[in-house]
Length: 398
Image (spheres, rainbow, N blue to C red):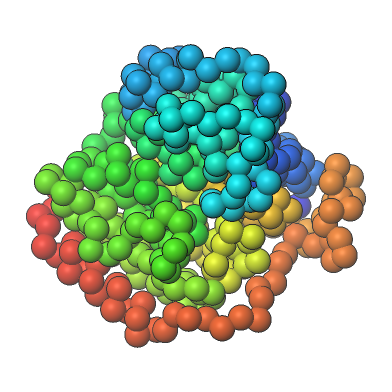
């Protein structure tokens, strides 16, 4: 590992055994966080002089209520700690329309709160939510307490959960809970969502405020989850123009995405002049993801994240989707390396606990698929111009 870093950076990496174990109970990403942490550790990144490994804390029920409704929290408290039918987040198929285990009874109340099918019941669900949300809030607190100017929580990024319901594998919206804490200090917060799926839960939470600008880059095609995120959906009331959506079509490649991201991001940054950044780095944007639809490489996304890192202001990096655990591990390890301004050896370290899963190439890089890109330069430029028009019609925040 080659080092060439800025000594002024203070970076906190949020993790502990409990956080990783809870995250790995989600069947669709089972054992993903263990692989991510193992690869980061194997490359020696945890020993970097500017990186501090910090254990998260759990959120209290009162802290969860900063976003989630009292009805949802009461429902979570009412669930038994042991569910004999389903000890993990079981799903027979990792898709948002998967068939739920028939042995588990789903009540009308369960469905009301989004529990069942893509978000099944699990043992001690309230503790799971308190732990997962605590990871991101702990990352935020490291920023608020001046312990770091960059914080990383690859077990966070659950952007679909609603105020009163689970959705799309997301039982709690740790992102919203973290941003609510940031609002105690910052007046202009830029949330950037790179997941292949639209960040609907985060957008909805801040749809009527200009204290948070949500910027989501996502695949938009008929029938693709969650089916929201049109350019025209840009906020209401005081938040009009502060929800920016940058959709694209199937199989977008770096040839189109890198410029698209750069142009939209620079427009938004110049308009909003944010004080702090929250970045959701869903790994399902990578080529070949089972629930994806983009055709991007890690190198493509690194170029986009470099744009963000070049801006002044604290930054919080979160995980998200990503249903190929090995690619997710490669992706977040390389993003961690980019944040630390280090260069990784191409070969996977043979001491990694999951080394054999990186075969047959055993390299940190990945290639995109040979697929038709259904995006055009003109269509993406048109999208960018529509976004520019939305921003130009709003008075700048003072």
